[in-house]
Length: 397
Image 1 (spheres, rainbow, N blue to C red):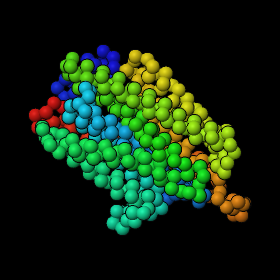
Image 2 (image 1 turned 30 degrees about the vertical axis):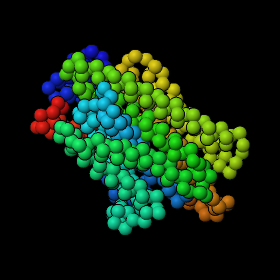
Image 3 (image 1 turned 120 degrees about the vertical axis):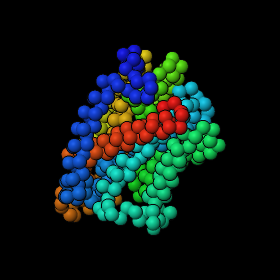
Image 4 (image 1 turned 180 degrees about the vertical axis):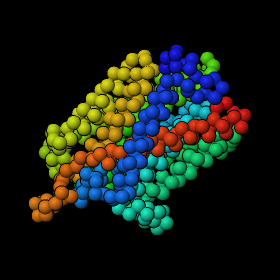
């Protein structure tokens, strides 16, 4: 972070008064206005304005759901482990609270995306009231809700100095945070009839990306928010945290690339049942999503930025990591749906909804903007509440 930005911090509350504040407010207003329009279209027209259909039933919103789950799990793991181990830059209650707030702020919009994707949104509660735990969807839904409860309780306990329950609950929350990004991979792996998804590597890919996303999310949030910069000691902790988050993000990206290469190289070397899916992704209609958004914008440019000593470039790299892994989620989700399990089915019935192709529509992007705006709002409100409660409890904000 530059000296200009450091000097623009409010030392009493730890809140940023830099030009970032104005930029973010303008961005949020644009996102929420467009997002409300998209949600209104979804509520009034149902799924008529979406790009998916009967053969490709999952699209952008499900991809963003898995992205939000990854950010949530990764940020909580890093924040909880850093606090438990007393790592400088992560050991203060205020630093822990930022990780918790970011985790919840990423998960709730993910739930909203899933709800809007359902044909009958009003039935969502049934996964909790009438669950079948042999269903991966029901198991995940319960696990996510338990995690949110644990996150809220740990957030409240962080205001109580010397709480004996805080670290044990953080350890349990970290365990759940490791579990549910991995379960996102299992969610696909369990579909045995789909050769593209039925791979044990997906669990590792989702966990590695969650760690990278959590580190990138915390790095960006801490840069923009300007946490703990009132004293020289605080600035030293912040620099220490930023360096660790950069290293964790880079390692997460590299691990993801290694396993992704392993998965695709095997398919390209030996032609198999899911080779058309890989061809579609690497050289077909989705090549721009994979090579340009995922690889170039989400991997190559961030790695170059992370190699510098500029905190501003690290923040941009963190943002691009989020964009790149959003594309990576789509690179898993869509190619697995573009080949039919019954040969000749596409030619048997002709309709715009009966095609093995998918591209998001403007309404889907607008709803995605709403999900992002909602996450930003939850994070802002959560941090404001954190500062106010910290002041009342006598802690440093």
